[in-house]
Length: 193
Image 1 (cartoon, rainbow, N blue to C red):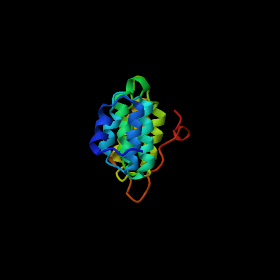
Image 2: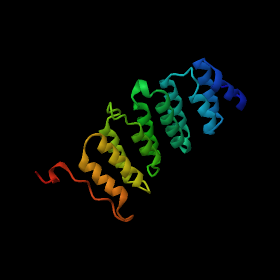
Image 3: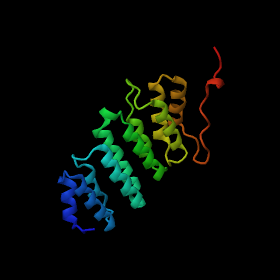
């Protein structure tokens, strides 16, 4: 396998339109153990690559260098949110926010950014999936208040005033750091009118 200089790699990642050339240079970068995420961001933004090709490179990079996996997945999520949201309804963005959270579950940003993808007029991505994801973050993040606020907003968007009120109150008066939050009221727990 040929070895490319850093400048040659940058040039290829930025300007090449030949997938095979890009792939060869990418393989060379991996073989050289180059982990600078800024270098690979040039690749991810190459306009000649399809979303599937970008995903291929991102997944391979994260697999080869687990130490940068969180950054790769978070960057891909933001990129897909910004560039492909109209065609995939934020599915790729949420997919990569989930992957970033799996790598570093105590970091709140993936949960918060995923919730920010929600389009209430169209219910995309589906609120139920975002709610489940945000709730899973409550078990891991150090400061749950922003997640409580996002959950309150999501429940308000879907018309569940009780759950929205529960999480809004939680955001204003969180439980002690040593105790987990009590579960929100469920359908069967509500008094009948």
